[in-house]
Image 1 (tube, helix red, strand yellow):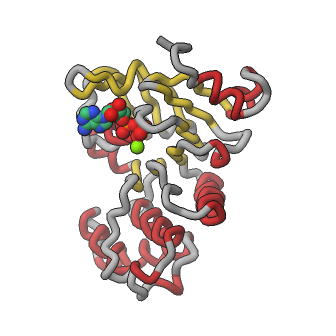
Image 2 (tube, rainbow, N blue to C red):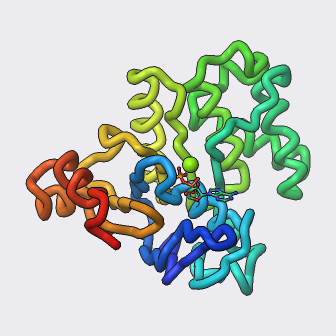
Image 3 (cartoon, rainbow, N blue to C red):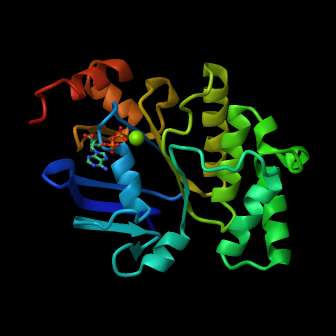
Length: 242
Ligand code: ADP
Ligand code: MG
């Protein structure tokens, strides 16, 4: 079963169309790079997938559950790291996670087990009692990822998680998140930076609200001049997709 199925999804802010008939699937354990320049509609898509906005046209299924007709089981399969950090800098790493344990309806005991597991997976066990303010940007993002995985979702959405990080931390975080896929979690990683995409990724290129590529990244490159750069330039050229 696919972790995510998006069919014919369109969305408008009033008269302004932000997404136009977007369709794609994401299989279990796959890393999908959602690539698009500013204003392409990436955050709008994340907002629809997380049900911040109601779907106006089309359908979203998470782990086989329709987001519209079965929102709770659908959202249960989903973890999200939003574009803007939502950590409390003055709370410790563990305290930032603890509150979400209660939100997910887990007991304190279950919560401790889940917190241990996710901090270990993010290699943050030794930092658990430190205030988040003391952590660098990459580690703060990993606290958010740990928090997003507390309820053991099958799909992790990240909206431009590398913005604001230096180049080395950016790529380290990207590599780190890829390891989740080996454990069967599917990842939708949003970015406007080509070097965060690898040849074997599922590549989704969004341009002016339209999905202009949806295939393995190496296949997309091959079809448009051989490199991802040439493909991106070609596919996002003004006027190519009216
Ligand atoms: P991205 O995340 O790829 O930068 P967004 O999804 O934020 O793109 O925006 C897509 C389009 O929708 C842009 O043209 C943007 O100006 C517009 N938009 C985004 N949010 C709103 C909003 N709340 N009201 C009106 N227009 C919006
Ligand atoms: Mg955005």
